[in-house]
Amino acid sequence: MFAKKNKDNSIEPTKTNLSADSKDVIETKEEKLTQTAAPRKSTSISSSCHISGDLTLDDDIQIFGHVKGSIRSNNGVVTIQKEGVVEGEIYAQTISINGKMKGLCVSEDLDILENGQLDGICQTKNLTIKKGGVFTGTSERTDKKIQLSDVKNKPDVVKLETPTVSVQ
Image 1 (cartoon, rainbow, N blue to C red):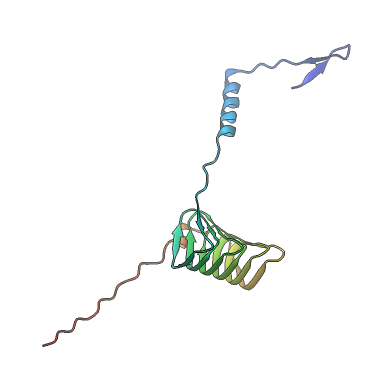
Image 2 (cartoon, rainbow, N blue to C red):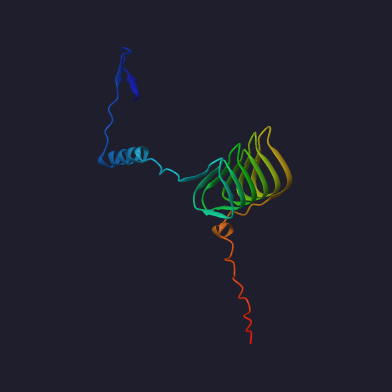
């Protein structure tokens, strides 16, 4: 890699001695470079799909269709694509809006892209609005990290017992 010049200006490569320890370090670095990250799991909601209800997942979700309800992603990215519409609440580490969102967004990072429209409330650490993106509503900056308890499901619905009437 480095060369040294002789008296007659000819270049002579220098010799390096690698010890067994440094060879192990090189092999370890090469192993790290050849290892690839595990692929992220992603759920897609197609443009012909209309969902009413609450979604809870651990990974990424891409919304091309219409969702009315809450979306809670423990560890992923919620992306509303250009033709996607969400009415309700989104709780995630990262939210990316390129379609329409009406409601509450709670995240560490919120990106409103060129075709994105957010009408509602956002509680986020980092808010980015690209040229062409529209935000109507209120924004609250929070330095709080999104915790697993923030994205957990709402409590189960309690069934009420109906009184029984006896007829004589």
